[in-house]
Each structure stands twice: as C-alpha cells, then as structure tokens.
Image 1 (spheres, rainbow, N blue to C red):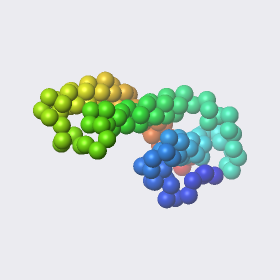
Image 2 (spheres, helix red, strand yellow; image 1 turned 180 degrees about the vertical axis):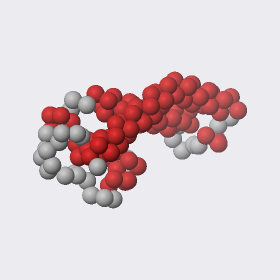
Image 3 (cartoon, helix red, strand yellow; image 1 turned 90 degrees about the vertical axis):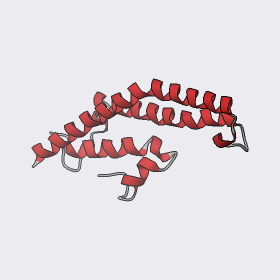
Image 4 (cartoon, rainbow, N blue to C red; image 1 turned 90 degrees about the horizontal axis):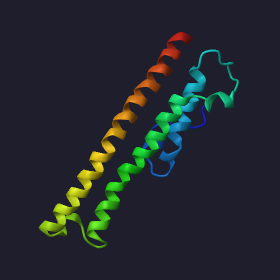
Length: 133
C-alpha cells in the first residue's frame, strides 16, 4: 500500500531533491490508507488529488523549502565564491544581515500558514484513523 520503504519515511524529509516529492507521497499514502469509506487494498487514485487541504499544505511546504534556500543564495550573492560571511567588512556584513532579515520577515507568514495546514492535515488523518478503530 505504501510506495516508500521504512527508511525513506524519515530520509525523504531531509535529503535534498527527494524532499520535493517524497513527503507528499508519504502523506498521500497515509491519507489513502486512513480515509473513511476506502476499499481495503484498493487504490482510488482520483480521490487523492481532490484533497484541497493536503494540496494546500504541500504547495506551502514547497514554497517554504524554496524560501529556506534563499538564505544561502543571499549569502552567496554577498560573499561571492571563495569567501565566507566572516570575511566581509562591517558594511558588507550589515548589508548581508539586513537582506537575510528581510527575507526571513517576508517568509515568516508562509511558515506560519504551512505549520497551521500541517496541523490540520495531521488532525484530519488522526481522526480518520480513530474512526477506523
């Protein structure tokens, strides 16, 4: 029923590149197994695409993955290649931290929405699992 083996249930969230699709697959599989009215062992692939809450969480999650990687790009833009943020002069360092703070400030509401959606997805699936018992 599940598309990933057990180690990928954790590694899929932290390994670059696969973290762009494994978390969604994992939650879709859990959702499919927990959904009320499901056919045991059956696969209703059309139903997994109709869950707006899961898709909303996933799109915000992807956006926040990208927003988290923006910090590295900002650092690279300010330092160039071969230097670190500790090699910057006082004015260059101030500009770097200003830009990082601005990026964090702009991304913060997205992190909050992603967290709220994650809680709602987990609560929905948990309630479904209690109904199955």
